[in-house]
Image (cartoon, rainbow, N blue to C red; front, side, top):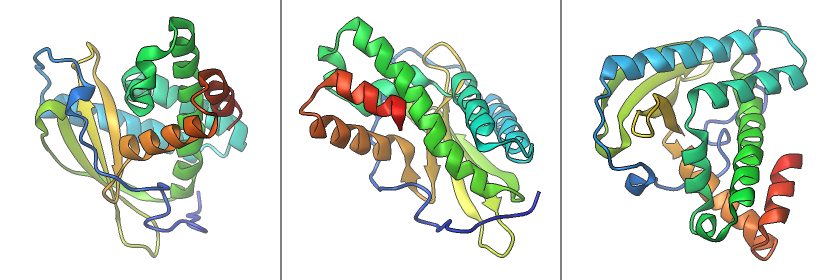
Length: 204
């Protein structure tokens, strides 16, 4: 499939910046995760992502497939809870469940549209290393024709009980930090109304 990097800027892939200081994001139990396990997971993620990109399917079908990527490989409940922050504790159990489901669709569509711009790109694993409480950091490189490589890094953890990625860092920009800011801004615009936040995510 031909490379198409129209409109894709190195800082435009993710809409805002911020440092991720989410050590408290994860449960405290010990992890036996190895670097090989983390690398194997990301290899599977990348293979599935590029299979979708190169499938030639309509955008609606691609985005549905990208939601499968996040459902299968990302720790969506943990990511969603972190991105909501303190309001999670005051939300009802029904709201928590509805928000998590809506967040999964929202994040899949948002990042799926961006991943589509990597059609025809070359990808490789650079290295992996222990990231302490954030699991294993797997560094990858994605290169579009005529462009410098993009640094795309993944935090992988098994502390929730399953091997999943918990963060995606593109050119130093953290998905977790970006989305925590974004979700907070949306919720504030609705004066803290969780139901309106959920409805917003469902239609975005």
